[in-house]
Image (tube, rainbow, N blue to C red):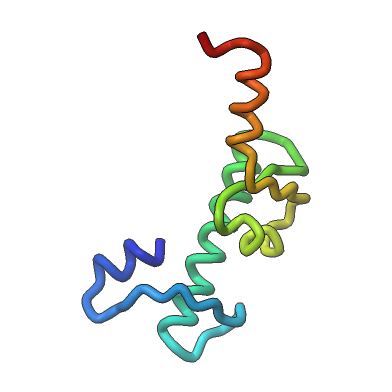
Length: 95
């Protein structure tokens, strides 16, 4: 989201810096908080609309960053995809 915003808006850069969450007094911290809340909101809305689970598995680079802002129990599993592929291979499904 931050990359899209900076690419589509003149004079906004893309920063990897982390900021305190809350009301911002600078553009960079406002973008940081806004994109983090947007991602958390999307996850919560999707879960509410499409399933009734209370625990979710998060994977990916920002899983640990996003999980504290969710009102769901989270299991953070960075190697989720690789573990799934490993199980798939062990069952002899790949020919």
